[in-house]
Length: 146
Image (tube, rainbow, N blue to C red):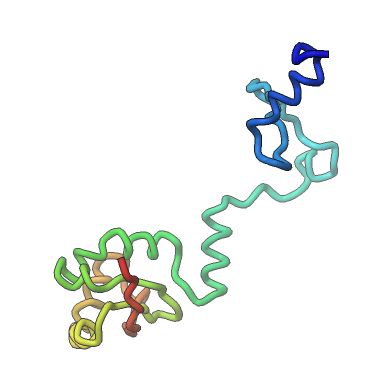
């Protein structure tokens, strides 16, 4: 028959979709009821769940890195730590075993940062506490063409 048959309507509706795409499924937005699973630890006999920040800090410590709070603080206050001029050419990459690795866009800025290492470490000590960063290493990053 004509285009008014159900098959033709479905064919037309799917014509706008890309090949192999699944049709959209309408989902209800109601809340799913929650209850403890019927296991021995659900009765309160097992250990309490560990907060995610504590787990993340344990993983970072295993990798030789400081806590997530220290890493975030260094990134957020980077311009204050190294100054606006140097911050425009340098970015913190990692903190591992007390060494702050910094990526720079030229050897000249890397020399400037190495020359300022003591001052940078002292500023980080005042910001996050002593011993979190004890040295600075530099790495020249490849420039990305715009």
